[in-house]
Image (tube, rainbow, N blue to C red; front, side, top):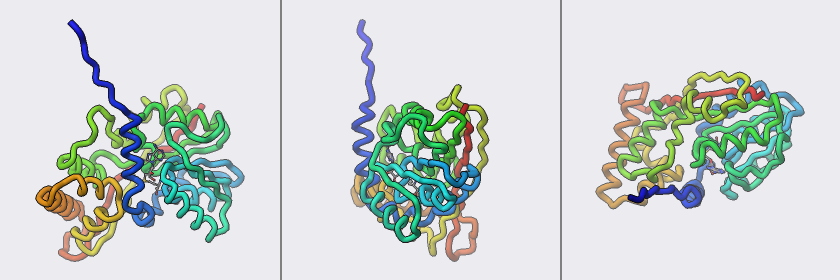
Amino acid sequence: MSTTTTLVDLAAVKAKQQKTWSSGDFSVVASRIVLVSEQLAETADLRAGWSVLDVACGNGNATLAAARSGAHAIGVDYVPALLEDGRGRALAEGLDVEFRDGDAEALPIQDHSVDAVLSVFGTMFAPDHQRTADEVVRVTKPGGTVALASWTPGGFIGQMFRVITSHVPAPAGVASPLLWGTEEHLVELFGTAVDTIESRERECVFRFTTAEEFVTFFRRWYGPTLKAFEALDETGQAALAADLAELAGRYDRNQDGGSVSIPSTYLETVISLR
Ligand SMILES: C[S@@+](CC[C@H](N)C(=O)[O-])C[C@H]1O[C@@H](n2cnc3c(N)ncnc32)[C@H](O)[C@@H]1O
C-alpha cells in the first residue's frame, strides 16, 4: 500500500503573493495605519544609534518610525515600488534609512547584525512561518529586541480575511497568517530563542464615510482584496462586496447611521532574545 503526501509548493504561493502585494497600491493603505508603527517603535523602546530592521516594510512606516528615534533603519520588502515610495518619504524627512529588496524568508542581512527587528503586519504574511521566525533570530544580535504587530483572528481585519476566504478559498495547506496574532504561536515559533515575551492587544481604527466606502477603498488599493474581487464573476463580486460592507457595519463603533469608525484588533508583541 502506498501513501501519497501532498507537498505544498510554498515558493509558488509566495510568487503569487508577491504579485498580490504589488497590485493596487499598498502605500495608500499604509497611510491609514501609521500610528501602529509609531506605537510599536515606542513600545519596543528603541535607542538612538541602534541598527533596526523593518521586515516586510511596505513603504516604510516602521522603518521611518525607527529612524525618527535616531536609529539607523533598514527596511526590507519584496515590492520594489513600495521601497521607492519609502525612499521618497525618507528623503522628505532627511532620515537615516536604507531600503533593500528582499524576502522575509531569506533576509539580505548579515547574521547577528541588528539591535532590533520590527515588523508591522509583515512577517505574518510570509508563508513559511518557521523559516521567517528563524531569519528574524538569525539577523538579531544576542539580547536584541523583536517587536511585532499582527492582526488577531477575531479582530476586524482577521474577520475580513475570513469573509474573503469564504468567497475565494486560501491556498490549501498554507498556515493562516492570523496565527501570528496569537502569543502561543509566537512562543512556538521563537522557542528557545526567547528570553522574555510580552503581548497586548491594541486597536487600529479605520474611518470611512460609509461601510461601502470601506469596500471601495480596500477593493481599489489593498492587493489581497483587489485580487479576491478579480477572481470572481459579477455575481460573486456583488456578494463579496455585500458581505464586506455588512462586516464593516457590524464592527462600526458609531452605529449612528453616519460615518463608520472600525476598530481593528492586533497583537503587539515585544520579545527579548537570549
Ligand atoms: C500589510 S503590508 C504591511 C506593510 C508595512 N509593514 C506597513 O505597516 O505599512 C504587508 C507587506 O508585507 C510584504 N511582504 C509579504 N510577504 C513578504 C515576503 N515574503 N518578503 C518580503 N516582503 C513581504 C508585502 O509586500 C507588503 O508590503
